[in-house]
Length: 573
Figure: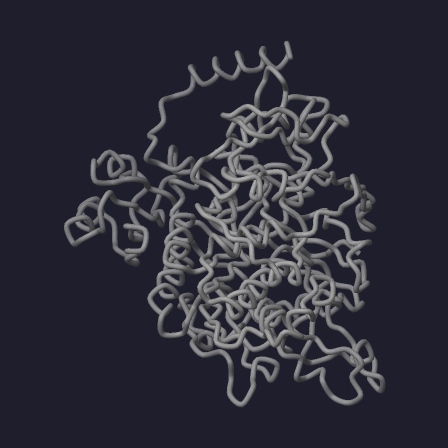
């Protein structure tokens, strides 16, 4: 405790000596390099020509209007950014940041549909019919598994502008995601096939919004434009679910981040937004054991943030373990408890087509026909491919949401999120470890609320639930209490879990979550800070204080990440 107090004093001294920062500028723009910079400027009101002129008069050019978040994307001299931020009608200025999507290999059946109990829902006649799912990704290839009589890709648009073939997938990531959501297994349904690669909701309609190029790269402004388009098309295509298997590091509070503000607008428009948590759970750069590595926009409390589990090549869930790369909470700056739940995401088999970038870079991820055909050869399949990452876990939940909405179209995004979290399976071990065969490094995970959230996706339980909830399903904020050295949920009277006992923290997150040093998980009952989720010494910084301040000091801890931080070359085998 004494060392913690001392470090607080040192930190305050450093803050006092640091130059004053403009709160309306993102961290990267406080001292930008010389030259032109692409920025997103959020205004205090919807931007008009008069607002654009504020940038143009400073040597900037308008790249794209982003009315969804009262913003626009510009290119402007970096030397003029600070002056622009001083304008009272400018709310916040951030770079138009790069982001990307996720992947891996090993030829074994993943059984993800059985693991999450999807066949139960199919037995009820639920297959996603009539529900539109917007896939904001690298595009979707039009293959037989996404056809019935006609293609179920009912709308396509590209926001990349790279001169390639429209909205068709050139990378391979978006098609894989689309197959997990809505593939019908047509190319693995021959009489000689002993396993069919179905998606979770095999008859949904897909709205293909391409924002990642042939290398899996995109920008905030492209994603925001796609979200804005999905909202405008909601009634035309009954878009009730949106999948974002992409992300980038967190640089500021979700309340300032334009990407987070955009996903909130979709949520408020009645669309269930599902986002991958990120693949930085192995990052121990700041002695934080992978905590505090949730990416944006998964750090937003409205959306459903999904981490990745390993099915261990079996249909049952009893032996399933967390994937060591799955990013952990709490979120930076805001300290939101994330992820919200976990789903299969490791070594998942889904759709692709030959000659896409991922296939060319990682041919070892191809699977042989013999994996699913009794008379199959060792030749690689031209339809199915293996990828790993939280990018593969998120579409599991998107598919589940589509099934729930087909059963009851009146459900709101908050009700979907609340039911998914409450019904998630909460049976986990206390620890698990995995040794990377290439590096020899062993990673150990604790099954706490910042690693597995409210539990493991269970579609049977979710579609069977009739629990009613009131209020918003915001992921709760957590707060560190130095006197007791505990981390507690901050109670909110507006949230679903701030009310009746049926939606208490214990009911939603479960009572078997393991805590460091064997302290009680749910100790304490302060009205202002409900249940303790951590007791004793925190896991971030068991031997030093650097991990603690990386998570709780609001520091940017993704310095080792790049625009490719979501790319996972090898999954946990």
